[in-house]
Image 1: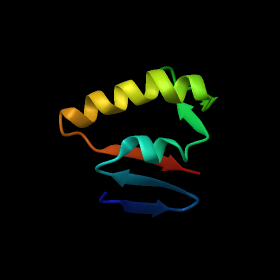
Image 2: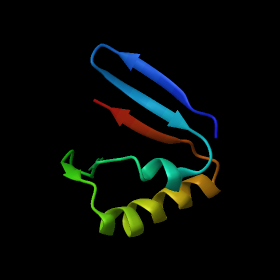
Image 3: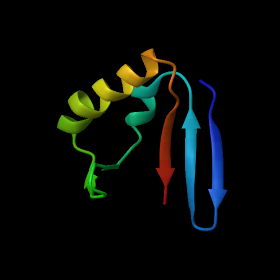
Image 4: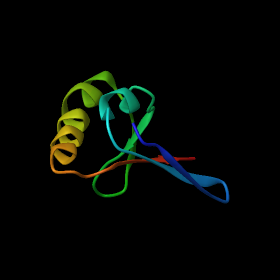
Amino acid sequence: MMPVLFNKGNCGAFFTKGAPESNLDRCNSVLVPGGEILPMTESLRSTDVTDKTLSYASQGFVLSLWLT
């Protein structure tokens, strides 16, 4: 894993490469298309978000988590 934390004011982002599923275990909400923030449920974590994250990771993309 290669984490980088970026802070600006009272908001920030956590960028990481590698082991996205272990980072998603620490998330409590998710930003969905349209800008709505939903609670991170086990259903979302185990299907939609993990599948999309692993798909991006296989293409070399980096996971970004926003911290508030």
